[in-house]
Amino acid sequence: MLKDKTIVLGVTGGIAVYKAADIVSRLKKLNANVEVIMTEGATEFVSPLTFQTLSNNVVHRKMFNEITSYDVEHISLAQKAALILIAPATANTIGKIASGIADNLLTTVVMASTSKVVFAPAMNTKMYQNPIVQANMEKLKKLGYEFIKPAKGLLACGDYGEGKMAEPVDIVEYVISSFIDKDLKGKKIVVTAGPTIEPLDPVRYMTNHSSGKMGYCIAKEAADRGAEVVLISGPTYLEPPKGVKHVRVNTTEDMFEEVGKYFDTCDVLVKSAAPADYRPETVSNTKIKKNKDTDELNIKYVKNPDIAAHYGKMKNNQIMVGFAAETENLLQYASKKLKEKNFDFIVANDVSKEGAGFNVDTNIVTIIDNKGETTNYPIMDKAQVARIILDKVKYLLEDKG
Ligand code: PMT
Image (tube, rainbow, N blue to C red; front, side, top):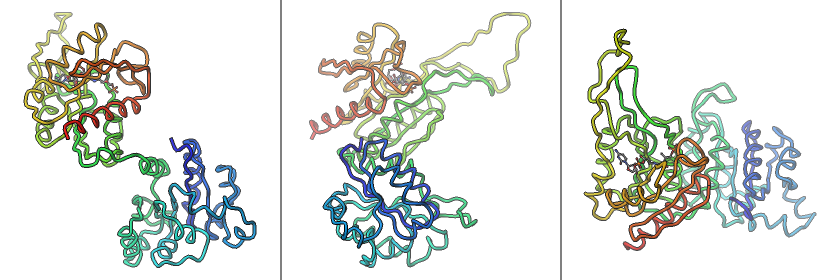
C-alpha cells in the first residue's frame, strides 16, 4: 500500500517512544521505506538499534555526522520524504518548529521539506493544555501542518487526561489515508450496514448473519476519499470507521426512518445492510413461556418496509447502489431487484459460496448496472470491493456533472 513511499519518522523524547517502534513495524509491513530521525532525548528512552533493526535503515541522529559521512541519500531526507511523521511529538519540538528553530537534524529536515508534516503529540495533560503549546499547534495548523489528536487516558506520569499519543494503528491509518486521492470530497454518502433485529419478546429476536463488514468497508473507503459519510448500522461488533457519522439502529423500521432523515440531502445511498424483510406481528411484553401442551410455536410475521424500494421511488438526483444476497439464480434475481428498487447498479453476491457474503473478510461479486452491463470479479477483500463500488459511484457522479 505504501510501496515506493519514504516516510520520515521523527522520534522525539517522551515515554511514548516505545510505541513509535510499533509504527515503524506497521509501516514496513505496508512496504514503506522508513527513515527514522531520533532526537537526543528520544535515544534516552529507546536505543537507536531498535529502530535500525525494524526499519532496516541506519537511524539518523546528528546533523553534523550526517554531513561528515556525506551521502546524497542521507542528506536529502527532506526531499525523499513523501510524508514526515513526528511521533511522539513533544511540546519542545512542536515549539521549535512553530518558532522556525532548526537546531537539530529533525527540525532542520522539517524546515527544508515541502512534504506534508504530521505531528502525533504526546505529553502530560497540563503541558498539552498549556496555552503556549496550544498556540504553537494552532499556528502550525494554519500553516498546513497536521495533527493527530492525542487520546485521553492514564499517562505515564500518573495523571489522567488528554495527552496520550494516538495508537500506532490509528497513526498508520492516518498516514495511509494521506495518500488516498480525496476524489469524493464534497459528496454526502449514506451507507446502510449490518443486520436488523426484530424482537419477539424482551429476551428473543430474529436476525441474520450480517456482520456489517461489507458496509463498514464502504463507509471507511468513502470517508478516506473525502466524502461526508453517514453510516446507518444495525447491531454489529465493529468499531465505526473514523470520521463517519454513526447511527445505530435495531429494526428495519428504525433503519427506514433513519435513511429518511438523510435521503433528501445525500448524493449517494449504498444499501449494503441486510434488513429483515419480516417482523413478528406482535411483540410480547413478557417472556413467551414454553407450552407443555403443544410441540409447536406459531408466530405470525408481517412485512417490513422495503427501504430501498421506497427511496428508489423517491430518488431524484441521488445515486442508489443496492446489494443482492442470493443462494441461487444470482444474476436473474439481482437484475430483478435492480429494476424493482430503481438502483443505478447492484452488487450481487452468492452468499452460499465460500469466501463470499456474510461474516467473512472477502467477497465474490458481480456488478450489474441499469444500462445492462455486467462485470464479474474474483474473490477479493471487502475493502477492495468497496474501492471498486466507489470508483463506479465516482464515474456516475462525474457523469451527472
Ligand atoms: O455484513 P457482512 O457480514 O459483511 O455481509 C455482507 C452482506 C452479505 C450482508 C452484503 O454483501 C449484502 O449482500 N447485503 C444485502 C443483503 C440483503 O438484504 O439482500 P436482499 O437481496 O435481501 O436485498 C436487496 C437489497 O434491498 C439490498 O440492498 C437490501 O439492503 C435492500 N433491502 C432489503 C430488504 C428491506 N426490507 N429493505 C431493503 O432496503
